[in-house]
Image: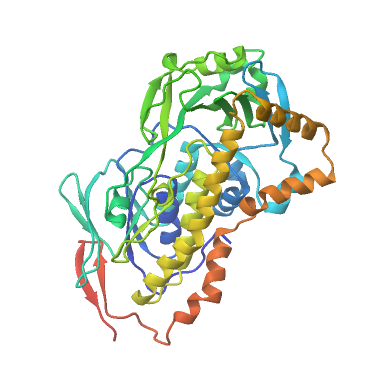
Length: 464
């Protein structure tokens, strides 16, 4: 039940810092339930981006939001994942995304361009009434006080904006996270540098060996020692995206880059020795790549809500995802659905604390486990040469040739916990079991501080 069809009895003013997947998704869900939302994004709508795997737990949300036909215009349904040797290009194994398995999840496994997802969410958010300000940089954040709990932000142009709630959806290097944690967030290299590229499918169609990939409905993976590559069609096969995963300075490529999606890296500087000729030609079809450095956060992000209870983290700001994983966008959208669904029940200010606590409780452990699964999958296809890699390849060859009902059942059991999840149902279950019992018989909200977005002045609304 990802769609909120409920108008909150008490509408709040929300500031959302960050107009990425999570920020725009939560703006849509909150605005749809009657809240007043303003999104502040320092970049524009058109920024460099790559591909996204859209697993069933995310695709069923998008399908409910925009419909099947609109989704088909920009997405490709993934039918399977061939595993190749990076050195030779030889097929090692094949994972079928069987229709019977996908049907059980309630969604489909889709292949999309990140920017198409952003445009979908931007349209939804603005049509629902949210205001989205691009090229708007936040330079400081002020927490509320006991007297006036409303948080505020100062923009680069000197403007000060105030709201009832502030959501930090500002990504890996989150400014809001440091306010919530009340300390500098120290990140350390995690051993992976990711390179992202997108090429025009027209060029691939002219190459007899690359043509099948441009026309495929598959998410292909090439496996090598300390290096792997994955790729799939995007924008309904008009373009082809790829990731290059470089691990631990052991593949001839020095680790480096930022924990962001902003750094452009010349393709000619990427060491592609040891890649098969097809993969080499694919990579060389784009002059530049996006370089992203995987960083770990040893102290963790234990708290997603600040001491005032009015500032909340979401998406990569709350749980930095594994770059190049299959679930970063889906976790951000699930966060948005849960938080938005909870606040659609808002009747009085006293409920805010229970809603934000429930949001973190419902989301934190799942996001941690899904990230670990992404890391394990990426490491599995980049094993060094040796007995473990040989055993992996042998297992893949056997599975490729021995699909039966038992294998189908085993595959479903492996993915069920991730793919079957319904964020809206999780929020509604909490409300039915716990949240509604905290309500009182009062029909009107408490005396509380609000922000009038027309002039950003603090006003007081009292009980009648």
